Length: 131
Image (tube, rainbow, N blue to C red; front, side, top):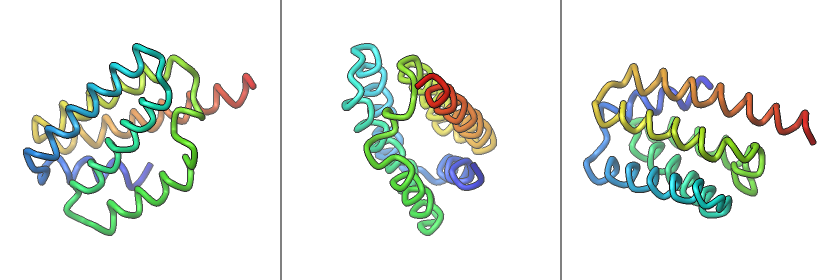
């Protein structure tokens, strides 16, 4: 929660057109997979989305640290840890982050990433409680 919002903030100021287009395309893939209920496709697009965002960060060490933390937390895929509704909700949160990055608004991208991580934490907790 301390690192990934900073990645989003920095990426908003430094992202290339290519990486921004890739984030937008991956968000669309996530939306389509969520609508189909296709967890593996959603997870693959989510992983690629976060890798693209981290790679767009001008601080390579920070981006790598975020990815290493994600890989350790989500060995099988981030979709395994959440309720079904999160595929839709989480994708909408990704879209809001991308919109902020596209607007080159680093502060808003950071705030939206913080909201996304809080939502993820809540969904993971909900799934754990209901197992």
